[in-house]
Image (tube, rainbow, N blue to C red; front, side, top):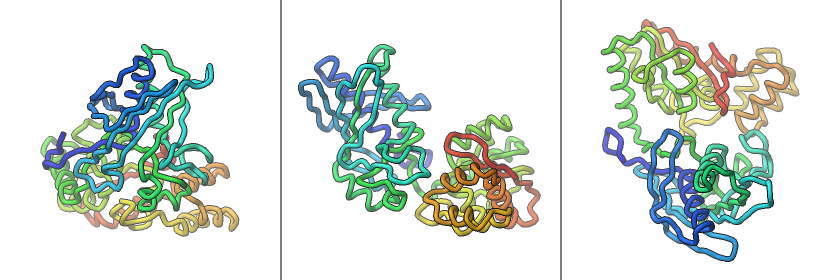
Length: 356
């Protein structure tokens, strides 16, 4: 499967873990491994994965898949991802364990509780759905252990240690698909998207950082698919092209982490080229009347999500503050172009937490 520019898509660690889990659970029930194993992704795609290893023991089964990240320069490309399944206690449902090479959460501010294996919510749902389908609609009592060969070493090349995810990598992915990260190709696709929107007469387009924010904006404004620009991290590309090829209204939507970078003046929101500035967020809070102790908590927070959680507990509208500053950055880039901008900030669950 390739992009319009010829780059090859890949599969997330979450998709690979799901396929390995499906194969292992099938073998636990039937005594044989499906190879290849098919799974269903959140948007309905049904890719097949070849097994790299398989083992069947007394009361357990294990299957491994080599991650293929396509043409994306992903540090987990080629990693061996293994799922080992065994029956769990009656009534326990599906539970997850971090095997060797998968990290454990040690700090707050992530979508998982401290002490949990770093297997994110969407991959957990995918794995649970896969084994439920194999069990003819019954959720099994099953322990799923995910491990990654050399995962602890791979994790040193990610942000996991700084985020307090220790011992290995995270099992990630919201769509199951890795989009190849080619700056030139992606920016070209953004420009083509704007050209198409202008050609069909759209008066309102949206640039979104990911699939969740795209869904929120589409529902919020009723925008058709060809008015949704695949912005990703390239906010600057959207703004600069619209400056010369204006459309009357632009919505920019994304999570608080990425949009806090836009608020801080960054136009490339990728984690490799800009970071969340906690001192900046603390200053925003002070400007809205936050106490020195609250500002200190925000400045020493672990993630932007933790900043949001702290702010929400005391009724501080940090999402609106971020949205306002992000809108200011966007307007500065657009200059006198006839484009009205609004900003929508969401949390990981897709709840709107700020607007401007």
